Image (cartoon, rainbow, N blue to C red; front, side):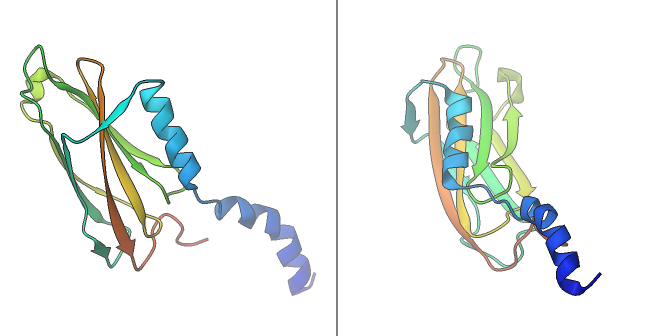
Length: 144
């Protein structure tokens, strides 16, 4: 089988690997989290470097303003990346015993994109913030 024959046989397989999320996929992921609730801007400090050399290990810090007591606390923090193959890159669930609503982690980013943080509060409200980052070496798609 010639080179073109191999490419034609692999085309459907390769096409499935190169599917990247679209902004609409990220917005759908957010809609699945918040449902029909209003999402407010504020209360969240999301920090991602504005320029990332390698998308494999991107430090992400998120903090939500909350007293973290029995009557007012952060129930969950969701991180959505608009350009990753799967936009919902992680969720953290908290209780008043968590003490603070601060998380530092590392994530993989497939490309330059907007990353959203969605906080679900104990009173049922949802809050959001976002940060844009420029990725020079993509992750999530290596080896394809």
